[in-house]
Image 1 (cartoon, one colour):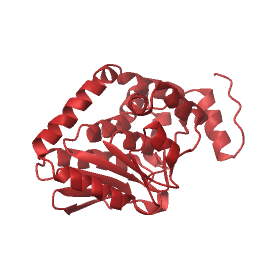
Image 2 (spheres, rainbow, N blue to C red):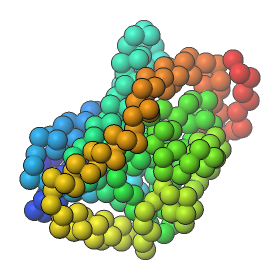
Image 3 (cartoon, rainbow, N blue to C red):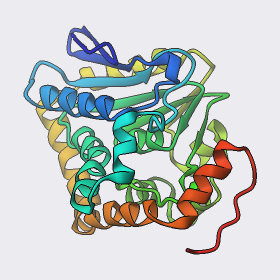
Length: 265
């Protein structure tokens, strides 16, 4: 099954492999891709014949995050406030759809996982990184907050101090540190993440599917109860940062490859 060629899905018994298939754009996620990922999750939620899902990216990386060249994304800057808020809900909705799947999800990360790609990876149950792969959250450097309910998920994985380090400083966190900190559950040689993901998937497929799904639901419910009571906040924070002068400065500095001068305006 293929969704407009941006998301491809293959099946091997009770295992599904979902690939973000935009290698020419480093698997950057446009609004269309976010919608497709939501649709894919909704389709899987209706299926009892799939017990494990591997999520990966085509080519040499997992995902560069949000596609900043997407014309639909540009609409956000000129849209009325109510429409801004609705457009900004695509990412959080997509991540929650993947987090709420009954199936066990395994994210295979080659190359790099940046911004929104980190958000999506955090919404999966397990993360496998290639030895030379890194994760990075660059939003603060562009004068944006980290949205998509990513911060609570990161806190559960790596703790408050490491989350602050990852999000505030926007530095590359390579696989070894990501593993030691708790973001990644496995490290493997480059170009072998799919093999390791299949090994984990085989363990999942050997389990009775209903107790496995119920265990995941229970763990997620206990973990996320407080997070979801405040989930609306980061969408509104993101909208607020988008209209700031610092955001304009951050983007302009990024495009011109210079150091930004933030003023708090």
